[in-house]
Each structure stands twice: as C-alpha cells, then as structure tokens.
Amino acid sequence: MTFGPDQALFMEDVYKIAESKKLPLIGPIVTSRIVDGKGFFTGPTFYYLLLPISIISKWDAILISKIYIIAWWLAGVALFFWLSRKFSFLAGLSAYAIFSVVPTFIYYSRFIWNPNILPFLGIIILVLLQHNLWFAVGVVTGLGISFNYDFLVWMPLLIFIIIFKKTLHSLALLSAGLILGSFPFLLFEIRHNFYNIRTLIDNTVQTPQSFAPYHLVFPLIGILFYAWGKLTFYLQNKKQVIGIFVSVLAFLLFLTKFIYSPGGRLGMPNDWDVRTQRIASRLICDDIGQRAFEVASTMDGLTQAPDIRWWLRIDGCLPLDISQYQSADVLYLVADRYWQPKSESLWEVTSLSPYKIENQHKLNNNLTLYKLVRL
Image (cartoon, rainbow, N blue to C red; front, side):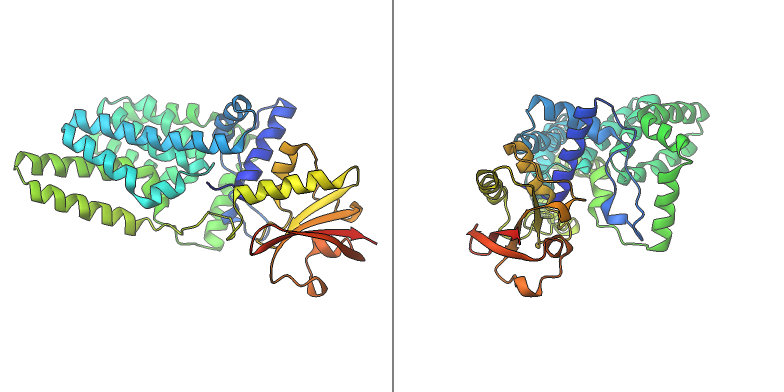
C-alpha cells in the first residue's frame, strides 16, 4: 500500500473542500510538469469522486486506497463481460486473468491516484462506440480528460473514426458530450483565459519530456485487450491450443516489459511505509502537549512532510501551517541514519536555529524521528 506525499496532498485538498463546502473547478496540479515554478492543473473530477468516498470512509486513507483498487477490478470485470460477449468466454476469461496478474497494473492500483480510473473509462468508450452512442462517448471522454490529461490520446482516434465514417452528426454529438463531461474545467478555463491549456502547451514546448509507456496504455488498455480477444477467438476457432498458450505468455511478457514498474512504493523512500508513518504521528501527538510545532522530512523533495501532516490531522494534533516554521517552538524531523545536524542546510530545520536535539526515537533500522527544540 502506498501513501506518499501526492496522496497526502490529495486528501488534504479534499478535506479543505469538505470544510469550505464549495466544489472547485480544477483538480490537483500536475507536479511532473512544473516549469520555473509555473504549473497547470487537471480537472476537478478526481476530487468530485474522492470527496464522497472520503466522507463515507470517515477519512480513512487506507480504506480509500483499497476502494480505488476496485476501479481496476471493475476494468477487469468489464473486459471479461465485453470480450466474452464480443468473441468467446475463453477470450474474456483469458483477458481477465492476464489483466489481473500484470505486475505493473497491480503496482499502480495500490494507491490513490487520478489515472487509476482511466482503464475503466477507456473500455467503456469502446463499448459505447460499438453502439454509435457518440454523445455518451463525448461525456466519458470529457470525464477522462478531466481526470488526467493522458486521456487526450483518445481525441485523435475518435476524430479519425468520425472522418473515416464521414458523419458530421457524430462530431456534433461528440462535441456536446465533451463539453458536458468536462464542463467545470472548461468553465474555469473560460474564466481564466484558458490558463491551464496555455500553460500545458508552454511547459511542454519549453521542456519536452518523454512519456512513460503507461501514459498511453492506461487509457488504451481496452484496445490492447480487444486485439487480444480477436487473436484468441481466431486461434480458438482454429483449435490452436498451443498457439493460445504461447500467445498468453507473449502478451503477458509484452505488457510486463512495455509498462515498466519502478518497484517499491511510488513517491515513498525505502523503509517509509504507512505503518511507520502512523508510528511517527502517534509519537508526536503523545509528546507535543500544547507547544507550537512543525514537522519536516529529509527523505524526499517535499520536505514539509505532507504525509505526516495528514496522519497528524487524523490523530488530532495539527502542526503550524507550512509558512510558519519560524514561529514553531519544536520541530519533529524524520531523517535517515546518515543525517548530520551540524551540516544540515534544510530551511525547515535552519529556521529553528539555534536549537538542540532534545529527543530521538528510532522508527526502524534506517529512519529516526528527531525532536528539535528552539533555544
């Protein structure tokens, strides 16, 4: 299970939405595409889905992470029924089996993340296209783009289909559906001179980055497995049992190698798991009393430790705002065994100077929770 800085920031944003009782028109910032401090945001659909789930689960991030696994399971179930009906029971069953064991799919399904809904939406689009339901295709595509910009990969494919079929009526229905599916985001863009679209283009032009394969695979999983279903149906009719077996292995190997999984927990350093996060949070709450405090971490780029902050909120002892490190009396710092206090240049730590290390608690073989007190 992964609960890193991104997941904590998602939860914090949704918590503030619940407190304000005002739905936003944009979603999370795309952290991988920030250039010179300027970034763009996705649509708010991810937050619209996460909000009711969070309220119903009473803000239990672990339970919510498990619920998000259901999004992948639904994609697998949709594949099974769709391909079974389109081709054969064997095609559907084999697709479901392969989908369920691909390591990369398992890896990305274990945390709260906006692209996790894209495979299911991509499969729904293929089903709708078979019935020429272009307005519904537009709505789902709009929702998908609002979840994550990766879903834009569907736009040239849909336009190509419309041009190939020469049906302007379909284009009108698709456009109307797109507007409805992404309406909150479009409303924000109109009000703010299309800020996100302009920034997306500018940042991509200034610093072109290569896309990881899953950027294409997640939205287009349905197309990959459609091809698999067609191949299985063909081999089944030819009674090529060995061919089916070899094809399963080849397709599984392709998916495993093509969509590389980085391993470990995305955005989480080694030895820093949810259990350790919870231990750190409870140690802080049991120790702090009424003193003004802050938290920080030397383990990754987000040194304000948003993951610890979230668990502190759940445990009922909030630190000061991230802009108030200089006002804190105490700083709780999570650092690895190589941390050297005398050579520390991290602003969150130096803002407390002069300070002393009043206490330290070893969280595991690599990480320690330090209590720094201002002198």
